[in-house]
Length: 261
Image (cartoon, rainbow, N blue to C red):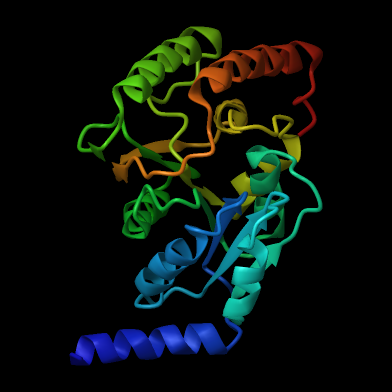
């Protein structure tokens, strides 16, 4: 083992065994529903990358009513800086992310999908964007420089259609609303999550709509992304829910639901 590897492993051991006492720079929130096959490798990927940095950080798994061994696997890890938020029932990915954002203690808060489709290392570019002045930095598969692999023809076709629906139905000014890799300042995360009403997979639309409505600066950052197997999303059903969510968000605007957030 090299000296660099020795130092990195020592840093990981320290993060694993001792609760962080410094003010937290970063919270990583991972929503999870029946992710027993993927959650531990994803946690390991973040631990390997971030333990080598000088950041004080924590990891939060926001369980969404899993019926498999997801929660018990995380509890067995017994890491000092990992928390799991257990839900009694499945409330939707958006609801899980909201609980995670509200529980996070870091100055910056990332939510990342449990499949590690966007590698943990991509967080560095998002952090740089926030340090340069953005309030919200979103991983994008559509931005110039993105590296997207293994996306099916069906998924590419649906994604292209959804982009047009978002553009004309909601007017959100980013090219990729659905990549599950988004970084917020703590202030932006708190305000946005407090106004959030969409609990399903299309919650990203509302989050970005709220970010724009509240005047937060959004940076769209090109990332690497790999279409990981084992997705829980039925794309055909989601497009219907997607359109319904746009209608709900528009109605919320008309009714003034977001006005006092």
